[in-house]
Amino acid sequence: MTRAEITDIFARAGIDSPAEDAILLISGIEGISRADIAADPARDYISCALEKAVERRKSREPLQYILGRWYFMNEEYEVSPECLIPRQETELVAEKAAGLLPNGGILLDLCCGSGCIAVSVMAARPDCRAVAVDLFPETLRVAERNAERNGVADRVTFCRADVLGGEHQIPDGRFDVIVSNPPYIRTADIGKLAPELGYEPKAALDGGTDGLDFYRSIVGNWISRLGNGGTMVLEIGADQGKDVIAIASEKGTECCIIKDYSGLDRIAVLRKPETH
Image 1 (cartoon, rainbow, N blue to C red):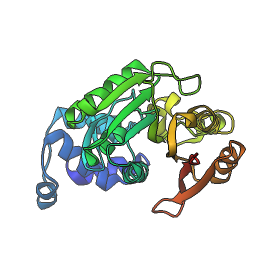
Image 2: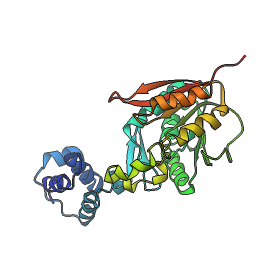
Image 3: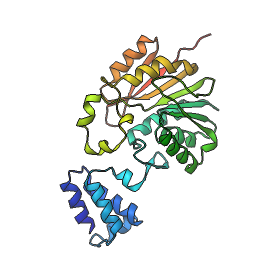
Image 4: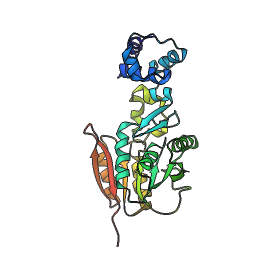
């Protein structure tokens, strides 16, 4: 198959970026640089592995799961159906958290998934440490491997806990920053999402009837783990800013909303009041 033929297959399958996906798939499966692919547009790639990968992508399986890896900030991550795929908008959350950590600070990452937030923040802040939490052991194993591959395993402690149900196995002490990209899709909306999202773990998407279950729990039950004047940084859905502000207000906490590169509400920043 040529690059043009793969692009056409993807376009007919309804994939949003067929040309880019064709290049990424050829490069990832065949180990060929983008420059070499562009330099020989008529090349016929005779490869069983590539043919199988094209069929998987044609079925709308995410490109990231097919390749088994993806980039987030400056790091490469193992990705699998055990965890949500790292996304560019979440980089804003990690960047904000990294900037808010004081010297020698401690980060708590709730619903850590692949570990991309905690690991990339630690890579950017070698003076800091992190605790990363997820409910599922298989997901934590992926996150642990990602900490190893990116050289921060000695500064990240992984713990199993139910963010909705309590703080099981979380080390004692206070954190300077709590960060989370929790499930925030309304349950009724999950079936309406793009086909690719059907391959991602439902537990990483489903935020309950109104999509706000995790925000209520995180703000209500976990903000107490912030140190004096500590900050909580949460990724939110584009239509959830006012709701999260209201949840924070009920707990006597100020909340501001930061927009992403598309001008959509994306990050809620909550600061725990300083006490004297």
